[in-house]
Image (tube, rainbow, N blue to C red):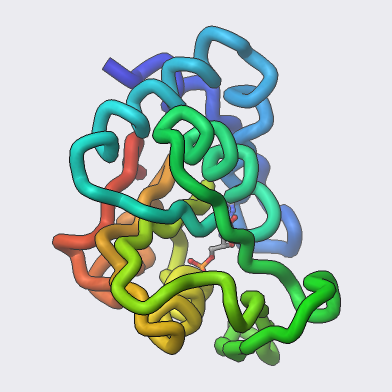
Length: 172
Ligand code: AMP
């Protein structure tokens, strides 16, 4: 059903560095029919799950998290790279292949007991989404699931996050 979305996602070899095959989702964004199809599929999947907040991961995650939260009629919270959020923040660091990254969330972004859906474009190793999960849980909120446009299964991210909580529209 989403074969046309899968076909539109473009492989870019050796970006951002040699050996990485980057999944470029911009052709999906720029095709109004495909973009709507993706958002409709997310809405269909999550509308009856009692989600109270969508958490979008900077930056491509915002492209999917924002229309989804709008369509569900619930709030959007954004996780950002360090130094971007203006209010007081909590932060989590996570390891990359070389070095580490940090992500931040406003300290009052979520209420205890909230039911959260974490949204990003691509699941690779799961390190990014896992760090976001820790930020969410530090605020006493509950992760209902992690939703992605695409999952790179061979990198094992789903087992890191808990496979039953991972949902992707297309898989590689
Ligand atoms: P990871 O933490 O390894 O799961 O990486 C996930 C984050 O990095 C997401 O925000 C993705 O946008 C990005 N990412 C990692 N690998 C790729 C890839 N091969 N193609 C596109 N985006 C990727």
